[in-house]
Image 1 (cartoon, rainbow, N blue to C red):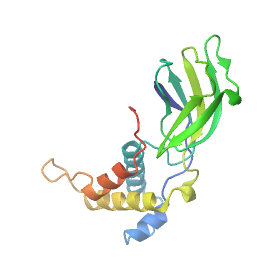
Image 2: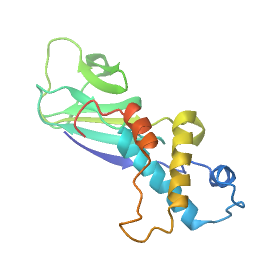
Image 3: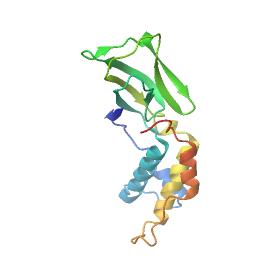
Length: 181
C-alpha cells in the first residue's frame, strides 16, 4: 500500500498565543521560532500516533486483494471515492463499508466479490480544525513545544534531549498504527 496527501491541511494545530501563555512568554506576534516549534511538535505527534490532526485529503493505493484495506492517517471523516482496475472503475458505496477497530479504520468489501488491483481509495481524514483536536493531544503538543523551547540552546549531541518519555508514552498509547505505515 502506498499513500499520499493530495489536499494539504490548512491552518495550525496550536494557537501560538495559547502556547505562549502556557510557556509564560510575551504574546508571540509573528514569532517564527515558536511557530516552527509548534509545527515540529505537531509533525512529531502525527507521525508518532499515525494520525491526521487537521483535515486533509488522502489517496491510498492497494495492490494485494488478500490484504486488509487499512486506511492510514485517520481518523477517517468520509470516503470520497473508491476505484479499481480496469480503467479506474468506480466502486459504488453500497459495495464497501468503513469499519473501525480501536483507533484503526479499514475498508471492507460487502458481499463475496474482490477488487482488481490497484484499488485506489480517496478520503478525508483528521479531527477537523484546531478546535476539534482532542484536549489531551493538544496539551501533549503544548508540553512538547515547552520541551523544545527549554532545549532550544542545545547545540551538541551531548546535551541534546529526546522527547520526554511521558510524551513518547502518550503518543504510543494514542497510536493509530494497527498496520505498517
